Length: 123
Image 1 (cartoon, rainbow, N blue to C red):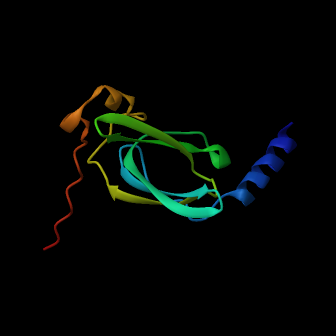
Image 2: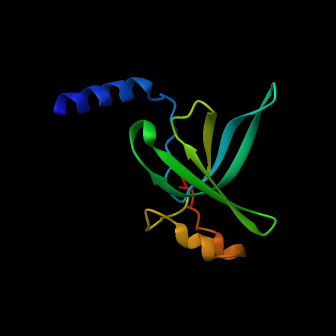
């Protein structure tokens, strides 16, 4: 059994992407996704706050939430998917004290904002 787990992890390690970004729960991100409509292919950007990450290795996924026309919209993306072009971090919060930010689902308006980390001043 142990040898089988080792071979599965070796196969997973070879299939992992090298360009995975460093982002955490609470970050505001722009997720660029490849969308195929018929024969045309385009890039769609989904921006919002990361409210959760789960899984590990090739099965790792993250959930992004944003408000569109007063309605909350959430999308879950596989981190290792070939349809995921890139993830850009737009803002980082000062500190998040939860692993999952599902409590943001009950919040509306300015209450959904997380305090932003202050830039370091160099003199």
